[in-house]
Image (cartoon, rainbow, N blue to C red):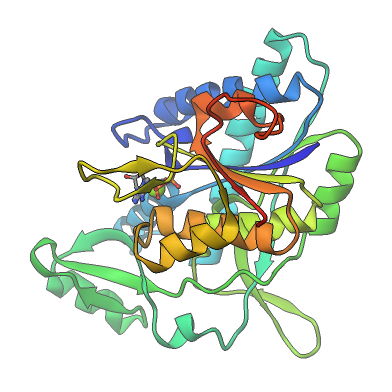
Length: 317
Ligand code: ADP
Ligand code: MG
């Protein structure tokens, strides 16, 4: 059994969203404890993670320090957060494994994800990033070529492309590591976005990739049986937040697509998780699970064989 586990924001920051280094280390410890239960059962695991708050912090540093040290582009921010979070997560995993007496090695891979240079996101950027700024400060950055948009009362925000992930450049290296028994942390923040020129050369681009959609591509690349999207709710829910809310259990992918078309899953949060889960199953994956860290222990088990609550489990129809 091979699992691709995508950790959401809550696995990397405190419940209230604080992201001091100690908050991130504490959150990673909790996540690693939950994952170690799987690892003790001899399941192959590749872990990917979000990086929104961490990139947000780097962007603030870029802005404030721009007159002293040169600002770095978004692809560099992605690479830097993969490095830091890879270190934090592998260290937390090593401790959780040692505490259980499980003899497995961990590794983190700086991961590039190919996007198309002509992705519509580049002409019409849809993803707001970083902090809100007043109009005058936004105008200054817009003069430097950035796209800023008026978001109403809270101020202006930078907009960037969120292109489709096409291919995980470092997929073969990740697969070799997991084949060799390593627990691998890879593809953080959806991967560093790169485009491929006609001569094959890669170069980084200013964009952010949805980490759940990239996780689906990475899952297929490493031949995962199960894609697990771990977030802060135990289930995807129909009529979410209403008195008639209905959590989804084991459900066929066609039915999930129909629910999505009816607008049950919010864009920018549950929507991309559902899309990623459906894509993985539609492309031949065994099943995809959306749940919280508390429900991870049930992941390796066949949902049809037991009656336990394993979160939302999307299966082929
Ligand atoms: P992460 O940071 O873990 O990647 P997000 O915060 O982006 O996750 O998305 C998870 C959130 O999606 C939940 O906390 C919940 O508030 C929200 N959400 C929106 N629609 C739904 C739904 N239909 N069912 C469950 N949660 C939903
Ligand atoms: Mg989030």
